[in-house]
Length: 419
Image 1: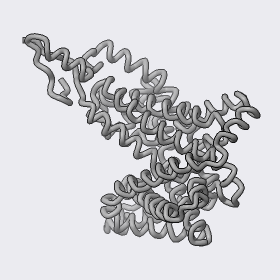
Image 2 (image 1 turned 90 degrees about the horizontal axis):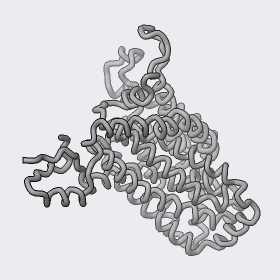
Image 3 (image 1 turned 60 degrees about the vertical axis):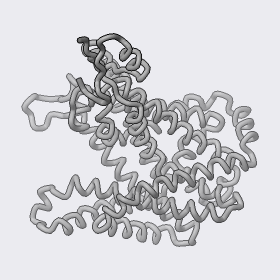
Image 4 (image 1 turned 135 degrees about the horizontal axis):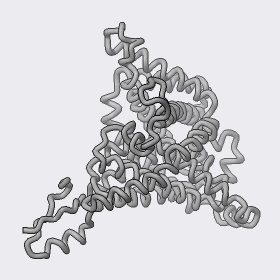
């Protein structure tokens, strides 16, 4: 009896993995509007196009990363970059302890971006407290930092349980604000028309570069995505998952960009209005209840992001030799968490706009050369060659499976199997 050797992954699983990337992107930083303003709105009428370019580059890069990881049976992001950079995965004498390994650059990028993410969460929460309660920004940094530190040491299980709910809440309120904001935008058509008249296509190179840099710093999610995407064993499954994610992310980001474009004359005229432009625009929509709900959800979501990120950092470093003399795990966790929080709070004093413009921006430039371009050139080539040598990894669609099932003597694979 003939047996199918093609692998099939159900679409529901592809959607699930694609949603992980969407939730990672559409968090507190996205909801604040600062990322969209700093990276896209400044490009005028080209902003939506630049946003779409960014999401396309991000999803294509992660598609290649996931397939490279899954098809070779890799077990860590270090192995992933070894495989990507091979045969140049080690520069220097083979047995030398100081031989340079290219994945170290990603390691540096990852740590800096995580630190920037925590600093941005603290800064955004402090700025929100400043706008809504009049609390001094630097006092807000201390308050938020202490709350995150305390929850990192004692309340991680609680935060993990509540993080999904908080993420959904901030996403829902953001979408409502975007929809209402676009409808009520006083100057969207005029802003687009004036921008096109004044700039034409002169900002196109900058808009394309912005798409690359935005996708670049978002590549910090690669370690998370390759773990969550482990069941996507075929090239088609990885592609389906990332096309779903592209649709979700592009729609959300473009809605955000259009809303912020329409309200740009309002929040740019308010002192500190561009720090959290979504909140500033919401305050001028005449719906105080929505502004209050948004502020609460935003602060809780940012604290959740800070706690889970710091805890992940702590888990990496609490077993280093320098702390081997500290036997109590809670004390060890507290020491590492306090050091990380001190660094993040120090960075947050620079202000949210500076963190995103310079911290995220420079990391984005670095990621273009160490992540995006390598995956979209070398990664694409290696994956295509692999599929040629192992055609069973190409994958099948549901339609193709049903067509095969009609053939006499065909025994279909189980869904998600890896024959």
